[in-house]
Image 1 (cartoon, rainbow, N blue to C red):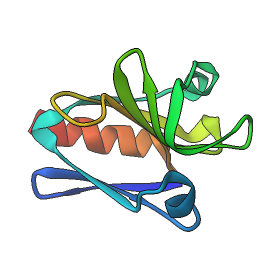
Image 2: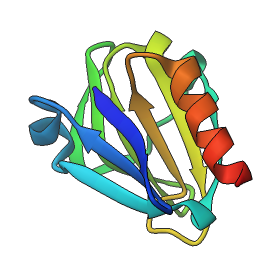
Image 3: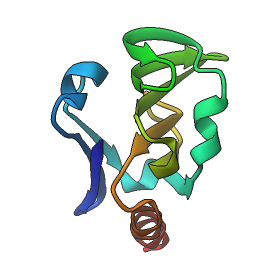
Image 4: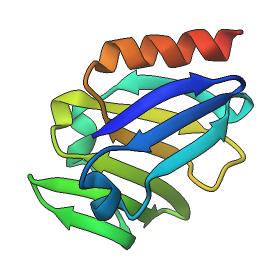
Length: 117
């Protein structure tokens, strides 16, 4: 699971517990200027993931780490698709972040509000 927050002009995503190991990342910091928006999308887990490099993927258990698909990098950290949030990015290493959070609607609201500033 991930914890998502705003620190000044940055979006900060922190992986918690063993997700640091599975995702091979403990934290991502993205300037808010490069965040295009966020949505709750439990169905995204059914989409193709692409090539895992590096990361972990056990279908219906966990998808975590960096995946390459259609020329883009996508970061995943999801176990429970009902809590998946998709964060769209521009001009960043990743095109999207797909992360599991405790309160998806609250996280989307936080991101959308911060982007509107």
